[in-house]
Image (cartoon, one colour):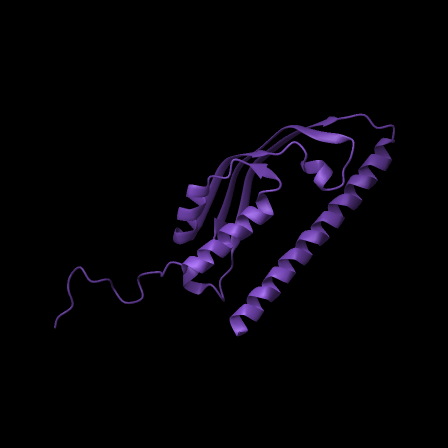
Length: 153
């Protein structure tokens, strides 16, 4: 039979992720962003995962984020992220690159009272930031190992 004029061209359709992969990606995004921000639109997240383009806009940074990083004596008075854009290359998932872009970060921090010098505060902030990054990298490494083990099983 001749091909239907409405039939898709072979290889032109990018298959959406399986439901379990969609749930995994939703949980990863919420796990890594949820503790720090408010206002993640779950509907946009769900639809975006299917398209491979997650666009989260007008996100509010939680006031206690700095204390989560071990930075005491400060709090975020007003914090906003204009957009977080995540691109998932479904057509080349294993060889392509996942892209994360953060736009327009505005954070107003207030000092809550501390008698340390500026040099001590800056040193402490840098140490706590490095510790927080190390923790997140470890979590990501563990998650990737678990995914690899699950894929091998």
